Image (tube, rainbow, N blue to C red; front, side, top):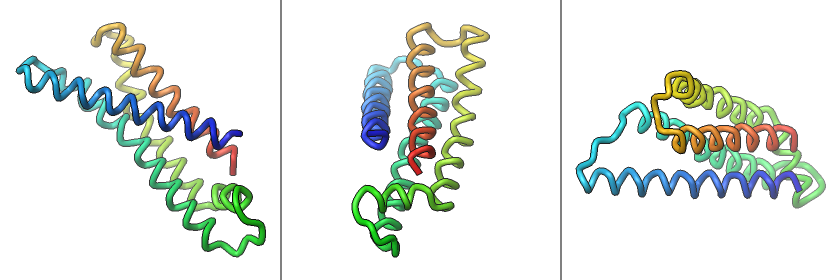
Length: 138
């Protein structure tokens, strides 16, 4: 059940990233000014779910080729508990501190609009939650 929850969170994060890309493209076409700090923060934040997916792909390959006798989900959980997978997830967690710090600065200075700050905070909370769920699943 925890892996399904993590998958749904990752789907939510990727849909949110797609929404950011569409909004950014629309503003670029219209010639509107784009906040560079917000764009950099969104770029950092949107790269992390892709990193998590790459770690999960590597874990799937490790589960496929591992010598663990039980197949299916047990092999995947075994691969999630291996040190390369955990190191990759921890690295994604460490990288998530960059957009988290920028979001915290935006809250302290009221730099972005309230909906943008709330959306970025929800995105980062869901991101950290997905990493924790995957680390606990191993």
